[in-house]
Image (cartoon, rainbow, N blue to C red):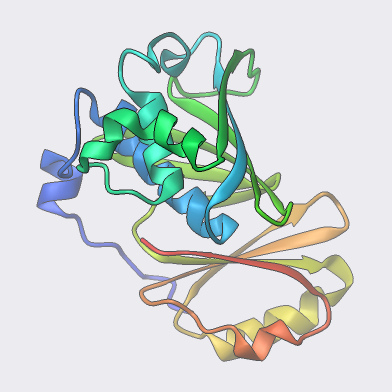
Length: 223
C-alpha cells in the first residue's frame, strides 16, 4: 500500500474548473458529480430519492434558482450535464417513475454552505445514505456513506466494503494481499461493523472477496 501516493493537479479541473453547465461550479458541477458517484454506489438508477439541504446553507436558499435540483437529478439519472435534457431533468425523471424530493431542514453538523444529505432507494428496495459537500470549481467531498466516515473526491476509483467487526483482521489481511496497490482506510460503522475504503487508479475486481464470510456489503464508484 503506497503511503506516498499523490494525486496530480489538473490545470483544467483544479485551477480553471471543469467543462460544466452554469451558473455556478459549486452549485451545478459539484452537485452533478456528487450525484454521479451516488448513482455508482447505489449500483444503478434510483427509484426514490430525498435530498436535504441545511436551512442556513447556500443550497437551501438557491437550489432552484441555481439549477442545483436539475444538477442532482441529472447526475442521479446518469445523464450528461451538457445534454439538453438538463433543464427538463426533474420532469423527465418523474415520467420514468423516479421520485426525487428536495427538503430544506436544519442540519446541525453541516460545516459547509453546500452541505447535502442524499437518501436513495433502488428498484429492489436497497437503500443508501450519503453526506457530502460541494467545495467549488466542480470539486466535492463525500464524507459519509451509510453513516460510516469516508473521503471520496471523485479522482480515484473507490471500493467500500462493509464487514462485521469480528472479521476485521481476516478481511484486512485478505484485502491488503489482494490489492497492495490500493490506498486503504477504515472507519467504524454503527459499532458492530467496519467500513473499509480502497482508493485505486483502476477498478478493483472483487471476485476473491464476494464469497468471503464477514463481508456484508460492497459498493464501488468510478472517477
